[in-house]
Image (cartoon, rainbow, N blue to C red; front, top):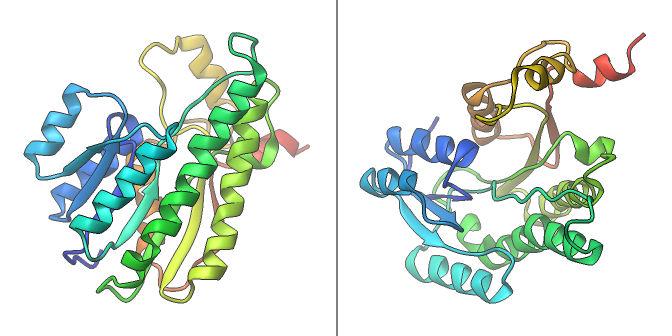
Length: 243
């Protein structure tokens, strides 16, 4: 990857994929701006490694405004924005349906929409040959979900953001989505669930964080790919529909 001093903004760096991406970029000597909602011990390690961290609750438009104002004030350029922050609410009745849908659309659609608009000029000013926006989507965005209807709908809308922003920000800024199915398990997932989940794809295993990072690197290094929803599903679509 071409190294330059323009920072990469990653949302949701406190755990799992967001934390891993931040650690990887920092290890390469790249500047990282990370957002988080809840303070965690993992964030101390990122700070020690040189990351600039900003607390932001994406459910609040006021907090989003404060975030983009601070980034634009403190930085003249961005190499990339990676929208990783996510919320996962089921349509189970535990929360009122309007709250579930509003939260899903706010976190996965309204927040990246506002951030992209507010910080587009910093991407256009990047000293690299091109800048990037990557939305971390989900396999269910194109398939739907029986138990997470609002979540799946919001991820489909997020994918559509990639199409619109790709058209509006080209040619300097490339905009794409990564739509994974199974990247990694949670620590409390039992073995029977893991067996069932792995069996859903042709590759019969989780992608893993290193594979996910290779997909991110592919998009960042490409000088031509834009407006695409890049599946990272191990051939799951063929396992589901194949004969």
